[in-house]
Amino acid sequence: MPCENEINPYWLTDDDSIRDWVKAHSTEEIRGLSTEIKIRAIARLMSGWISEDDMDAMAKICGSVVLMAESKAIQDSVNLLEFSDLGQRTRMRVIFVKMPAVIPGGDQNLLNYYHGTALDQAKKLMGMDLVPMEVPSVSILDWWEYTDFGKGFYTHPEENKKMAVEWAKRKNTVWGVVRFSLTTQEFNGIGGVPLHYKDKRNDRPANSPKLFDSRPANWIEFVEYNRDIRSSVQRPKDNDWTGGYPWIRGPFWGRVDSGMPGGGPPIPDHIQQINWGQAGLTVLNTPVAKQRRFLITKENEHLLGARAGSGAAGGN
Image (cartoon, rainbow, N blue to C red; front, side, top):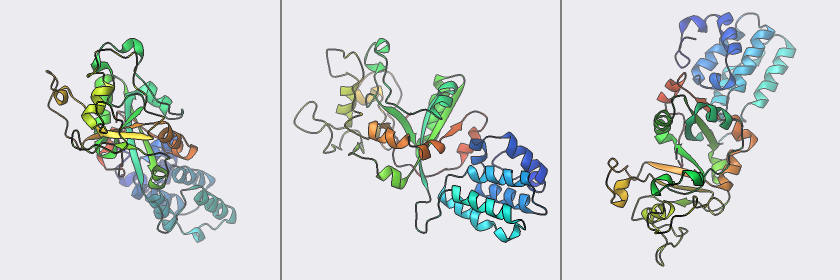
């Protein structure tokens, strides 16, 4: 397949090419193919006499599916009666059982979040348990070394996904971006009350900490507190809110927001990041959520061209 997200007439009509490509590529790479390509590839593998190699290829294609909608589309496209061999028909049923369950009226979309970093670290994130990160004390020289929301794990939401790539490229010669995905049911089931700043100055969420007066802090007060801008005594490390909030969402800070010289224009309020706390990371670390993680590199960056889902919260 010359381009993994485009239909190529040759391989769609040649089952040998399909089998060879599927065998040579990872589940994550197969997952990046469109639903249409997956369906047409399976249809070609089912045409004529179906070999065990054809079954293996179909199993790997189906095993890459994480979206309920895609699972339903593929299962609806396959007529099990076309398998003349009872053993193969039974195996295909087992393959379908292992795919995301098709539930009428169920959750068919995923909420996607993106984290850009060095490629070596991105590969580690594909399988490891996520933990709150913090700026090392030895690296903190002044306010610009702190983070907006303190210790945690920062991601960009779906609508900002290309910013994750830009950040990764700016910081690393060899870069990678990991996409994390949750169902809306998983996201809504995260325990605790999140902290969400809808804008930089007007919104004061009721559960925001009271930092400088009797009112809950707005975004700029919260960020300047975390960045140690309003204190004459420098803290030795990042503030840690990860135990109190499952996630914190809000705009990105720039020097202009605090009236400081240098830096570029302010980032609009609606472009936001999310910093995951302990309860949120617990859900992102479940085995089923780990299986959905997807690695983006320079080789498959083109897959970001199409919107992959809808984000509800977002960071780096």
